[in-house]
Image (tube, rainbow, N blue to C red):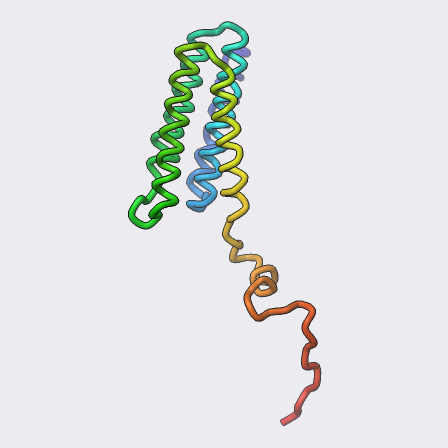
Length: 158
């Protein structure tokens, strides 16, 4: 009985994730990739500390997959120029560190990658585009719109 409930909960979670992915903006998809990689790598550290070698290997592999086929594959090296090239090199470095962490059972290397992912995640969230349904914020932040500047309040009747 509980096995079927677990499958149901898992299916429900999967549908929720799929729905979130399908309705997400490109910016939000990258945020979700960062969050997925971080969650998976935190789990890898826990599994490593618990001595679960197969679980640790699967979790690290999933983290590598998210970085390689999600974050790294999303880079547009032509449009992104030097920033994209630097991110590509950083993602390659992260993958190498995770491979070494798996090989040497070293949680410190995973922690290093988690720190790097966290910094990138925070920076990416900070540059989130302003939502279209928030015109007051967008217009207040637009150049030339000084919220403290005096306004002309006189009305001219025609």
